[in-house]
Length: 368
Image 1 (cartoon, rainbow, N blue to C red):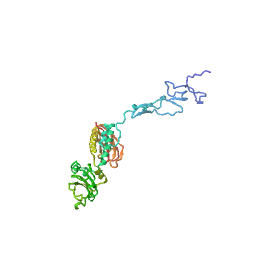
Image 2 (spheres, rainbow, N blue to C red):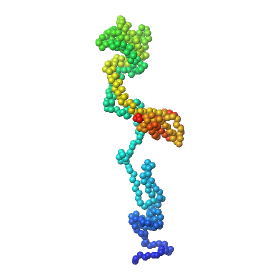
Image 3 (cartoon, rainbow, N blue to C red):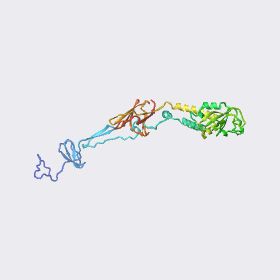
């Protein structure tokens, strides 16, 4: 039987049902739909109803027409509406090469530089030749240090050039020994150490060190003294020696005694001059290229949960490293800061004012 056509709607008041009936079957939604129109989607296997704006499908939850926005660092990448019949694809680029990553941060933390040489070396670099020279110099310096008592200071006559010059006086003077007390000084000429020429008899200006001469002619000469030979030799062998300088208020230490006994050779003196020139050349190569300064905070007032500290950037460039420390403990801390060529702005999250001198900033970088 062919389908029957009706000029008006069918009255369902008697049963309210259609037996063996169904909706129009389509692979996709009809175009130009009207509100209330329905069909069966053979692709989705669901019944669709048009609500006047969108198609709603059976066995699916209806959502509001909310808009989802995808952002990258606060910049919108793409937006789409949830309640729609078509699919949306958002493509997020993942960096795979160095060019995708972009520029690195402008600040990088390096170790705390405490010497001018370290600061200067940042920019100039240390060449292999300089590294080799530093190693050679260090070896030479260690050799020289072995000849100089560790106790020698600027106030110690062992480190006083004028004292040494006056004590030796002439190139012909020879060191005649280091004696524990005046009583130990030899009374026999043959018991003195021989000089460079093999002579044991002291000559004018020869010198020796007496550790404790308290019994010399009844006078009290404590500590270490330099004695010089006057040229007069007496029977007891000691009358020709007279005290000239007090070296130490206390007797010499073993290292000081060893230094006096060994002396400094002419080759070591030459090496000292060579080292001085090498060190001067290295300092010239490293100077004027890098800079480091430190500053402590003034009293800071809290505003909106933040205390702000402005530091004058005396390096004059944004390419600096800034490290922050608790002044009392020396502990390194992390905080937020911004750098311009003139100012370093530091911000501390705080609920209270910060007292002066609580933090120290160490700034290192290349001079502008």
